[in-house]
Image (cartoon, rainbow, N blue to C red; front, side, top):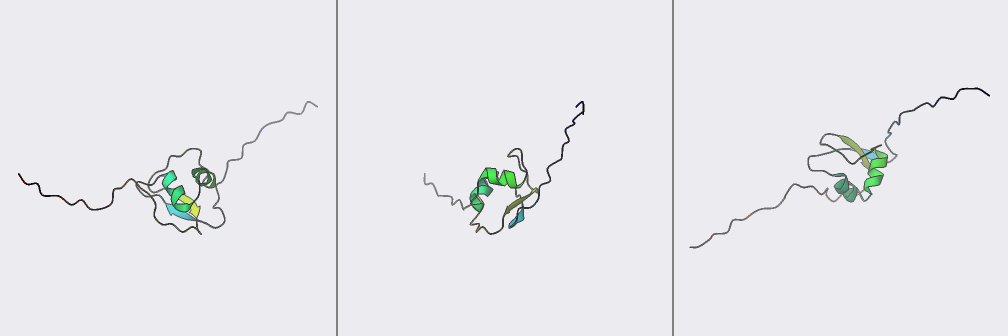
Length: 89
């Protein structure tokens, strides 16, 4: 009776999930592309990295599954060769 209750806030400490490794984000990476490459969802990436939004930047380190077979991380960087064609008058 009459005791005052106070709420305490404990900040979340994001810890590396077991079996996951560090990945340094490269220019052009997106959470969707990383999730696709690692066979997980964007939400799983966000949860594992204590992310409240989907904003990422080059140089940031994220935890990603270490046992996944990554075949290539989709990016917005164009690849391929452009071959000019000759145009006759």
